[in-house]
Length: 60
Length: 263
Image (cartoon, rainbow over all chains, first blue to last red; front, top):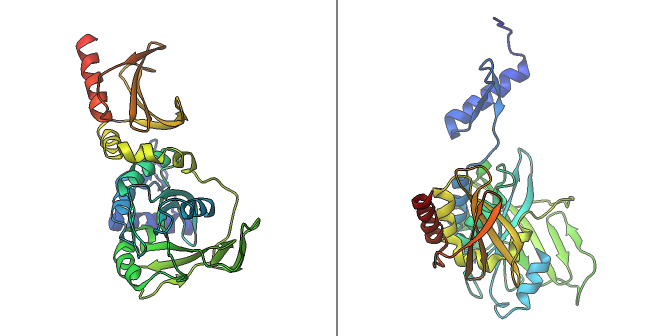
């Protein structure tokens, strides 16, 4: 079992991703082989986009 | 956008305000606009206001985002009839509440006017200021607004090579608007529904594909204006189907029910 410490960049990416997950429900991606953190998905849910479109205010 | 703005001004409703929703990629320090969704014929608009037909734009966004789920809504462009090259106070009231739901809690806003100095048809676009683009009489001025801001700020724009991913849809926008709510319902209820723009009998058409249980089998629907045609793709064969229903979601479910009784 490898307990390699994260380097500074990996640590920052993980912290940012965890905050995104906690604050905005962003997805955390996991390596299925060893469950390690492999980044975040930048995908935007359909409903988020459609809700924003449907609430575009009237413009004058 | 300049091309469509010019076409709008030459149309029967050319005196009205119009606009587009912009989809693109939201990055940390910039946004890349990659698709425009028109206000649509179903817009509510006049000389001093425009409310987009959101149903058409919603299904349009589903179709464009089939290509890339990173695409999100960046903001809105709308036109002004006079020479006000800045969002109005009333725009600010609405947009301040709206930007909070955008990625980065910040939106991009464009204002189109037709008050440029150049007369006639210009061959080349100009960028007299970092946030202003002009082509002939037409101008687009760009601004950003973040949640909590009390005023828009000018937003520098740069052109880059890239597609308008929604452009193929513009030719079938009346078809999208005619069937928007039913198509949206179908896309939400059925997994893996896909959309394509294809050649219809007289003009471009929207093709909707609903996969069936067997690999390669599908119900395919062609929508051309108000007209709806159904096909069954089964075992490499294409069979025309006639559920007798112009409401596309209902037609699909009638076909699925018929298939369930037969197979």
